[in-house]
Length: 163
Image 1 (cartoon, rainbow, N blue to C red):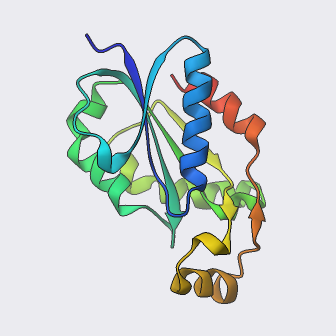
Image 2 (image 1 turned 90 degrees about the horizontal axis):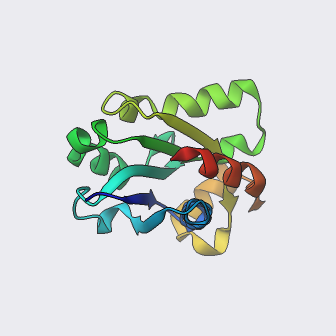
Image 3 (image 1 turned 30 degrees about the horizontal axis):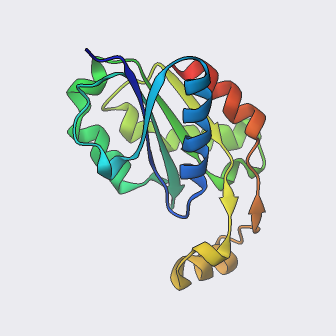
């Protein structure tokens, strides 16, 4: 019997993983049994009644392994309540224009599966957790300011309604 909730995530430098962990904690507090897994460690969806799936954004796209997950499990996800969350530094400045931009990053995944709920959150930039190339790009080209821009109250509220 599929009675568990899966919280699966794809994270570049750990911020999305930390958010998924907090979401799993909130969902557990609601009385649900939760499995928290990186998308690459999910073997099937048979045991789950619903799925919360999140990805970081890099260069305007969900992580490739998160997109691969949706492609691989498209039929199963279409049969379960599914929520998507996106973590993107563009939302450091949470404006209507930035939300529209970040929402569009989800279009390729939405074309595969229509989520019942979507969440969009600012993340965290920690240059020490990035490889040289990504750190250089983020500092010098994108000019992303280092810091933690996550609003944990918003993340928790969304998680409480995600399943």
